Image (tube, rainbow, N blue to C red; front, side):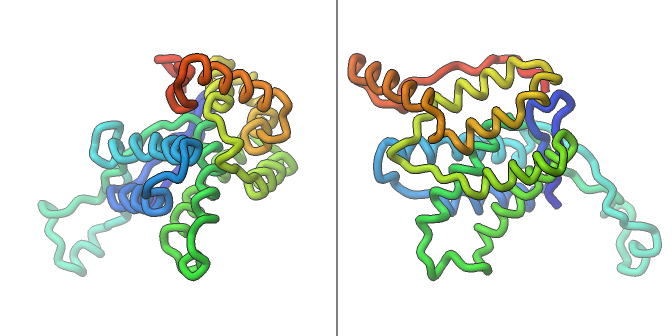
Length: 241
């Protein structure tokens, strides 16, 4: 089963699961967002989610970290099914990787853009891909209970639920600055500023600074004859998780 836990310094979360867990999560997100983008802004929304899939894929391919987790296979069960000790152990391999919390909160907002595009006939309560994604994001939310009061936790849930992203307003640079600032904070400041950080992600269209930044970035693009997807802020190379 999937496991999500806040990292020691609240910088991100550690995501763990066996091969099948992570593989199906990958397939579910990929199924929802895959396809030719309608415009450059939709491409940027799609591309941010592909960044998560990149780390996810490398994790279950054994290129990040791995731990051994007890599977509760005792001697009685082994004998009952005639499993030989040399063929099976009492531990399973779980693959793990760290992911930046601010980027993951943004992913939780962006994925809804694609879910809303699904045909109504397909987007029902039995859609396995949507259900898998919602299950994973519910685990992410649960991991925040360690640093939030019940009131703040419910506020975060409400904000993420009601947040709407549109391809005509989205610019990645706003969220890159938020993530860089978050990385450079101390653990104590992250805990103190978390509600404001989260609000600036899921309520980004309410911030005047967002539109001022959008105007500046678009002006730079016109001057350099490039598009929004070609301008990025660099994240710090060393992250203290």
